Image 1 (cartoon, protein in one colour):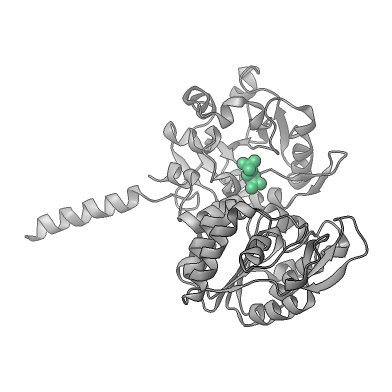
Image 2 (tube, rainbow, N blue to C red; image 1 turned 180 degrees about the vertical axis):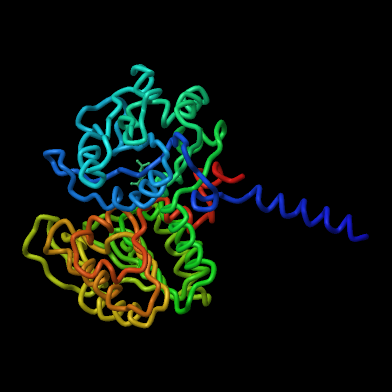
Length: 411
Ligand code: 3PG
């Protein structure tokens, strides 16, 4: 091959590699543009509809401020919860009010319906105004992908930026649609989430420990399959563990248990015995009659009373997993290990949290809506390397290495 042909081939290869990469907003000049910004404002609300926890808004602020600094106008697109149609209880108004506190120099305007609102609001937007489209899930076409709806969204901006890692596992119109029509980039939070999670999975400092809780085995089976090949210890807790405990031959009483997943749990147990990850299951449990019950007792896992349910891990399990977490160099945690909503059963989840926070030598990644709800008001949050805004997105990204929202941004 002569030099020119080699050079051409290298250029082609380089172009191809660049084509399949996300370009992030700090890698190009974005100035004086109207930016359609997909953010994650999916905050948890109190029953009176005030914001209970705004960590997701806070995590999008660096991208918002970065874009504003360069004289761009922002049109934010976000969803809140899972409305099927317009539901005033799930308006983004509380989010708009919180944004006004974080960005006092800007006028933040909620656009009730961007499809029917006066075009002048968009045409006359100044760079001191931020427009927030009302909950995008109010539009059925958000979930039911629509090219026309994607075009309408895209027509609002010169460019599109996705900073909503938590919804990147969804093929929702606002997540995968606009990149088909306007130049599109990744935001700073998306960049951070992907970099930290990829590093932890692809080049982990060992030993690597994953703690997976929550309830449903069926939604986490793919993830567990993947994790068992890459981690050294896989700690399983929460309702999820009950299928494994049952697969070990123990009765789980009246506990929540996905019996249809027991066969798969048995297969994973045997994989773990073949030298894959060491699977760590509860050896004792806190049991009670109901989740509201205040009279709990601690029993060995092989002695769960037939009329009681498991609601938390027991002290022997805590001692065992505490030792494993203390030695870890990389820790991934998703899902509470007990019914943390009742203080009687939150000690296991608290224990996992404090054990992770105490191991400051390790790279620690914590994610998942329930996990964040269980820890969000706690001290030592700054001792966690990365608190992921993604629940399902984090798990699916670990499992598959990519997500629809990421693919949509690739050039
Ligand atoms: C999440 O909370 O994990 C994301 O916001 C995704 O929400 P969804 O399950 O309603 O798509």
